[in-house]
Image (cartoon, rainbow, N blue to C red; front, side):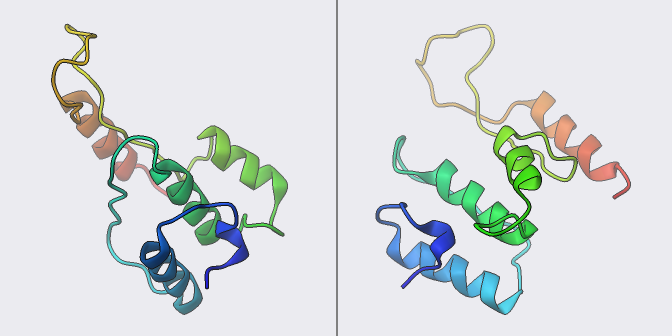
Length: 112
């Protein structure tokens, strides 16, 4: 059984159970990797998990939830693999680029 926060998410049974247990215990791992084929709901599950962590869940602050949805929250940096700028064609696999890593470094160096 999963939390109402993940209502509407299809599949991901074991992963959702683990995320719900994490929220209930209030104990976080240092990092989480949401992986899988395109279209399976990785982004949705990650965003809902972030809402649960921030207290912006179903009954939380709607303004906070909206900022999280838009990726416009000062404590959130959303990083996704991209394709090379030179070749916009999807010939190879998407990768994290050096500039993205630099952005993460700058983000983590900011005061809270």
